[in-house]
Length: 260
Ligand code: 13P
Image (cartoon, rainbow, N blue to C red; front, side, top):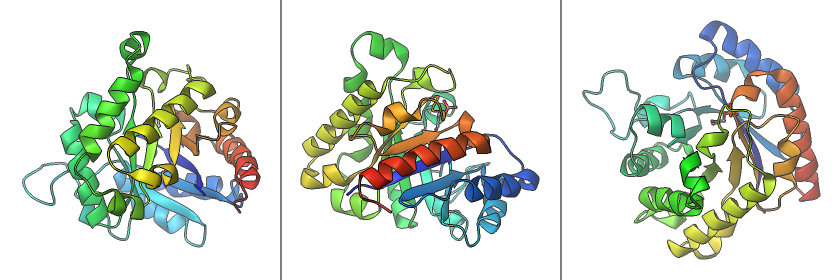
């Protein structure tokens, strides 16, 4: 049985002074049995959020790690530096692919670093609007998956709890969410891609999340889809009322699936 995961990606928002309070408020308003909660603040707020969440069943995640272990990479953070600060990490987010030029090969190397450091990875994939309009969405996502996962050990990745987030670029921060049916179709395509990479039955155990303008008002559309296992939430994840609504709805799905 796959878990239901609601992950908050705070992106470049909050300060160490306010992040802890926000995390605590969200945690206290989202206690739903069977829902795995993750909060991913900026690096400088990881310690504050970790401390604020002591005693709460909410994981802390980072938003990225560098693909090298150490060295002359000014401004970067390596996976081993997150020891004690984070237990999850977002990798290959489309904003990093677009603004930091991250390649599929680098994202694959980041996966290796995350696994070696004991971090649970959320691998992000998703097409831009031109690709969807040209009917190439599945092809693009499949190439991203292949670029990051080919040649990597499915057993190790599934043991590390790999999560895949389907985040169509045109839906991120635009208020224009994908349709539930499209997210479900892509989740099926992602699992087919995993099988073609030699994952066999393990493909069915990988949680696939949807991300892109998720709110408490539209999350139902995604969580009613059996192929979709939760959400990676951006803008709405900074709002306790929104997170309360999203996680409450996730709790219904968790109960329907016999979790919690
Ligand atoms: P929004 O929810 O703000 O569209 O962001 C989605 C996202 O990129 C989460 O990683």
